[in-house]
Length: 198
Image 1 (cartoon, rainbow, N blue to C red):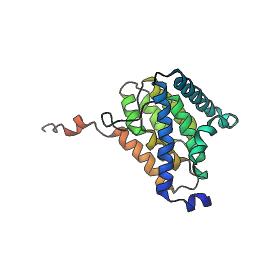
Image 2 (cartoon, rainbow, N blue to C red):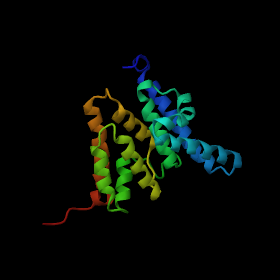
Image 3 (cartoon, rainbow, N blue to C red):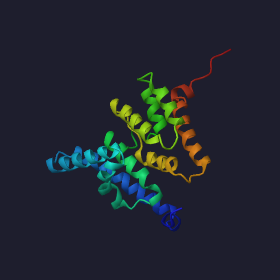
Image 4 (tube, rainbow, N blue to C red):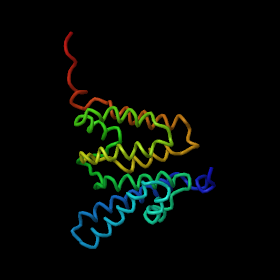
């Protein structure tokens, strides 16, 4: 394990993640700013982040957006991946009015629109670490096609766990279970409706 990860308090790492995701959300704010300069800058950065998803040869496109936030070495690949995923589906920071959505919750919303979404989601839950980036790219593209938002703070936390070769298998399983629970959880109207009489 990296000595950096061992010597850095968890709260500090969470704060770095928070600032990094906040920076990604600020790119969407620049797109909506109305300032030609800010819009151009955000588009250029997002294009670079999207290209970084094309494999290791293009990964360097993301370094300028990721490394200023000092990701722990064991988390670098997860941060680079999430930056690219955000660029596929940039969106505003969630507010109290629409709440934050886990990947499972967002896919549940998509499944109400597309019959194939549940099958895609089940595939995502079952993939190994090496295949995860490919399936996440497909998933985020699907969510983007229907303009369904998700919580990128939570996504980064989850992806860090799923991509960590040294992660406790139980922690990895809990992330997948959390996504599945959110996908299958009844909507509040269904959960609060009375049971039919027998």
